[in-house]
Length: 212
Length: 212
Image (cartoon, rainbow over all chains, first blue to last red):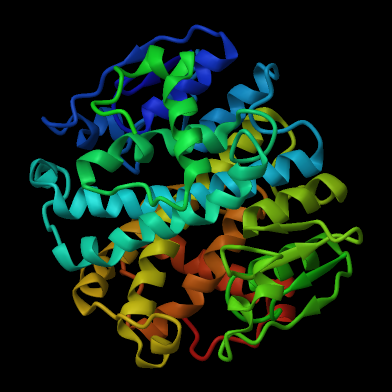
């Protein structure tokens, strides 16, 4: 088994943290995005969507899409559970994972791709109006998490889960995007520090530039 | 158990088809989006993201996010399986579900929300440039499905699954958006007819306006 993608960049980060939390060891193989390796036939045969990460099994079967890869690993290595044990836990964690993904991660990614100059290599048409429309959605997405995080240590409840992992990249990106955590979101601020200081996260990523 | 949302409109359609395929009976309760019922405190207590559908359990517990609701129902009513049985089936179906969701559904939704005049009530700022950027992505998303559908009856392989259900709304929307299926995608055209004519889909939705 191996994972295509650079361990500390982009969506492969999510799988790398997941793997660290499971305490398993899977090698990562870098893919040269800047030179378009992901658009070459050899890579498209692994993932026609031309995206990393891809989990390649020993028989050559390839699974892409971060959350699908994580679910496969969750089935093979159930402990510690990061996607829930009971049907209700599973649905609750999936609900929060998707709320973070669509409400916060997507908005942060839109601002990143459509306003940060060096991203132009990956996003040829940058639409500053689209970035402007999404900037307030980052804060709205965080505000939605505040009541939940005021009552629970992690996004989906008592335990660290894939929902927290999905938040890592956009949480680290806030400073670069010029987004400040609102004063009325102290629980989000506490959670951000906890998540970014977590051993699995620190092992995959270098520490963030600025303390929150 | 009940589901908040109108059975034949928006994302509740996906849950309604899922429920039909399972052969179970769960009542749907309409939510008056045009008058902002989803932004009132009573509804926000069920889903702070202000979105339908929401599955409310008999004890008042609420699960939102379409795919999380479906996964909960899949656990309670495993047959017929719509999200896979083995770890590899589960990951494969989730991969294709997400490819359809991010590669085709998202692009169609962006064009719908940012170019169709009557949607203005739900999307106050319509950005025609964002619609223009997403229009070709609809076709790219379909082209990615062609080789898979040339070799398999359904998106995720031999069996109808949640990945096909995710495609129903954007497939029906193509005519309204002025998107023609490319000639080099005959398998997509065959699959579109199959999926839209499927009894569960026909039962939830009135027939599409135009044959493909």
